[in-house]
Length: 369
Image 1 (tube, one colour):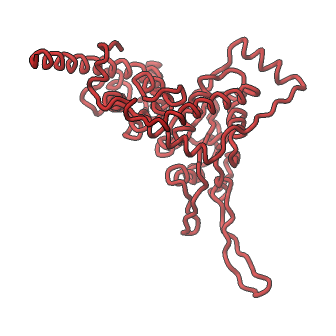
Image 2 (spheres, rainbow, N blue to C red):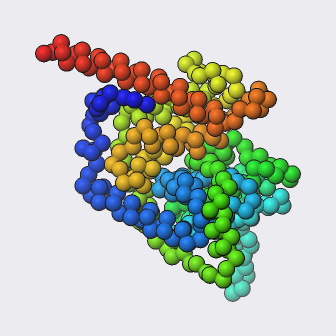
Image 3 (spheres, rainbow, N blue to C red):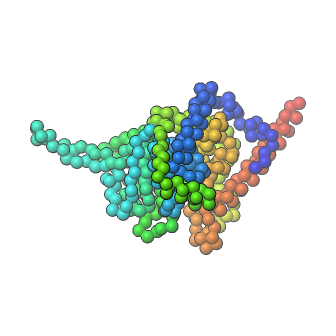
């Protein structure tokens, strides 16, 4: 997207650097160093998958939840568990199965008897969801009733058992995995729960060189250990830092345009949306586009989020929030293809708007002289 020199800066004030304090700049460098160390630790056990790791860390420092989708054997579970080891946090893994019950996740109340008095009372026993990092492995293998047990936890950071609310430890992240090819005995996630995931990350096959390195590394007697690099307090501080990353109104407006152009009920939408989309992304997508852009900018050591950051997070944010219709399936049109067309449409509209506003500013400046 070509813009006139400094036109974006002239449209929004104050500039991002003016809005970022010196203390925040120091913390930003600390965050960059933390990311480098975590990537180094993950590199001990994970070969390749740099984009997946970056998107996972982007979600983490934005304070969101992440859904990883890929065929078996691509180290999705190993990646999440290794990430948890690089964080000095409480980690629990929940293996989702068809017979898993909601109380197996949230916890339950049991009757406890005081032997000295004979009095009985209820005592709450926390479930595995009471952790900082929760791996929901093969989340689509359990029925909707059990899947829904995570809804309150993901959104409200609490669970309700027997009418009593129990706060979850902070920070709290759900990292879920899903197999896209096996549908026997699975239960598709409802849209309400999918929308709680900030990112939908596709884990693809490794390259030839990476697969060779994987085989050599996993068939030897060499053992690698991931060392923790980040504690809960520091992570909480970095999540707040990411939220303080400035974003210009024009960048936020571009994010909103992406979400709105995915909705078939809109007026100014691309033809691909009108033909192939049953329903599009809601307002939470706009929020996550901006927040994801802020997190990506921070991880790259930049003091403001720009259009390239929004573009980079558009696919994982929108991928699970756009539902295609039968015509898309018949014509072989994927969701990623639709997102690509929406991006091009929004970029053309934003470029035209910025050029008009830039021309208006030049005209007013000349008239003032």
